[in-house]
Length: 347
Ligand SMILES: Cc1cc2nc3c(=O)[nH]c(=O)nc-3n(C[C@H](O)[C@H](O)[C@H](O)COP(=O)(O)OP(=O)(O)OC[C@H]3O[C@@H](n4cnc5c(N)ncnc54)[C@H](O)[C@@H]3O)c2cc1C
Image (cartoon, rainbow, N blue to C red; front, side, top):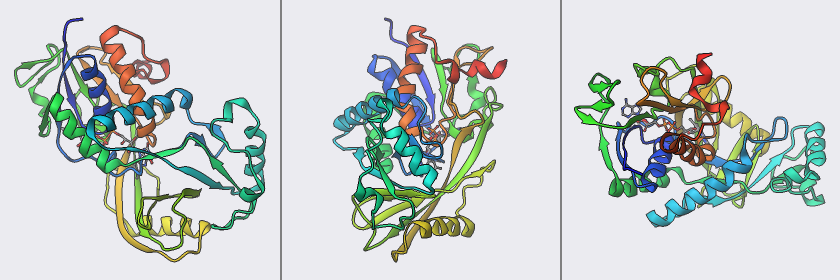
């Protein structure tokens, strides 16, 4: 197949995943990023296959998870870093009903890769406030987001043209796919919540959802598991933990707040009375959608313009396979999953 040339706007997890997929197939990529990342850099990077509210599997997790594992392992090899780390999530049940849900699902074949059968030790687990027992999620992990973004961009800059600048939308010719007089077969917009400034895709229904995270140190919290109830406690080594996160809908203001800090501390108090010290507070904006599905595909009038957005609260799980699916769509005309097509918004 003839080599094609793409321009990618945005080097968060969306932009990185589609770049890697295109470069792997031998195509030429130029990537522009303004360094004002609002989401991927703030994310805790948790990969949790279970939605606890209803004790269901995360959307398409059986496909997303193995692909993500391979993606982070292979990219890690190229960069000389390990990005994905396995960690068991220990859910402290919030009611008897939730425990019963778990008990009914743990026997089902489709859940056996994710739910450990409850043991008496789980039911009496004593390292956190335990009112209704606890259960361990298998096949869960976290991505070391800072080193992932830093190192994968370093590697990408050896295989593509990575430019640090804010895109000038007035220099894009939507008909021909030219940017600053350079010609491209496709321009892929991966701007996260900043898509609202995009002249062609600015109206896509992204609901900016703010999230805050605390970093704490604690001598007594367990470092071998990630505790979860109302908030997550993610060990990051040396008695340091990330705790989060809050959800505030419809705001692009990413300053940290006293309310966010209090909410996380209150939620942590349901889990543990262990003493801790707060060392950092961060905030970011998730690009979420009303139907909780990503938005991908070509513009209805200008097919050289392509959108890849709406990764919501699970970008690190979804993006590796979605990047490949978008590349397959652009290069080999393989239809995108109906649920994620940009064209679904046009009905
Ligand atoms: C508090 C918080 C916790 C989270 N926790 C998790 C988690 O545990 N697990 C998980 O999987 N996900 C988590 N997420 C969600 C995850 O961060 C997102 O799904 C994902 O990062 C979205 O990636 P993106 O590439 O679409 O957007 P972004 O990461 O925002 O990247 C967009 C990029 O485009 C660039 N850009 C934008 N406009 C322009 C322009 N005009 N010119 C040039 N460059 C531009 C930006 O600088 C940025 O680098 C969390 C998010 C938050 C805020």
